[in-house]
Length: 250
Length: 250
DNA sequence: GAACAGCCTGACGCAACGTCAGGGTCAAGC
DNA sequence: GCTTGACCCTGACGTTGCGTCAGGCTGTTC
Image (tube, rainbow over all chains, first blue to last red; front, side):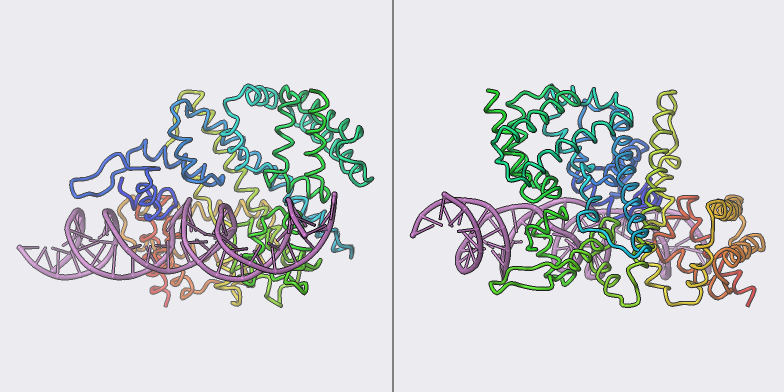
């Protein structure tokens, strides 16, 4: 097949295929004597994968590394795509629900607080993050353990985990609001609860690892944003409490 | 509120807010004496809308025209956002189903045809298109009529409409495959059926309007791609048949 | 009053293409 | 065998939506 046909089949432009060729993401396996690109069935396979990952928001360079990884078999890709798509499904449902909530509120003549309205953008951990996390920690024991446990979780398990973490986040927020110092006993106790929660639900989280997480809460702006959305100053607060707790343990 | 706080609340970067200010999409309603941006609650409202439309894939310039349209009240935006989100939900479900189908096929040791695998990218009419269509035809009587009728449609109605149009597309494809000329009686009859289908389900489609549609099938590459995915050469075939039929009527 | 986080305005960089420009190629029809 | 029109090629520049410094003011805190 030549470019035009492939483009029509896949619903992309010819220019896009040229681009993928240029950057080495998808080079047709052959050329005619006159230089026309010739796409084989396996090229179409690859294009299909590329488009799925692209749709999920992956940068093309990352798509290339994913697809060129010899350790990742086709089924692994399918499983990952399936998981990411379900994540998106959940996220979109949440947004639909949020819009419906707002419509309802409006029709009753009331309006929501800004926090409530931005909430849905907050329940994040979107596709991009999942991929980055895997790249960062994919080869650690903790990641493997976490993957194993979360794979076995049912919907109910997830709700329970979410409720647990909401609760500990509330404890932090209340302590902050009450003016309790972040390195106080009370805050450190919440931090310890946080650590044990992670250990129970995801992976064995040592105080050292927990301290590392704590640092990330202020260094990675997405984590910062997550906590700041719950309460201003909470990211720094949790970070300090977690690190103080780690020091106390050690 | 100043930039940093708004950014944390909404889960975007400060740079993004600067950008929105620069392009006039969202300018804070005030500045301090020293030039600091000050965001009011209504600025937050607008930001919320912006982020929703952005999430749905609208270019920022279009978001601006949407939000600055004095004729569009907040509820209209909510309704549109709701519709677009549900479209995305349907589309994502379809993709999940497609991946599951492929996983199943693989586990049984068989593989799908390329057409089957790209199908899901094909059932298009995504968010962007809906917006463009409205911009193009939003002020025509046909558009209003179509909006009115489609609003009243149930899920079952949609399935029926989809089945009808699939059937007429198959008639075209079979005629093409059989080598029947596009301006033959048989092809023109299919075209006439197509026109009446549009008139029944969407808006009164005169032969002239139908001829215009026909031209678009070869001029707009997305329509072309749609028909080409059913069968190679079908876009041109349908276009010719539709225009020949219009000439026959006139 | 010194330190440090937070804000400002340029200005350049980048990803993923869109969009010509200028020029060969292929199939169909005369 | 020649034209015509659709299709292909390779540059090369343009666009969107920010990221990422750089260089400099502001505001709070100890």
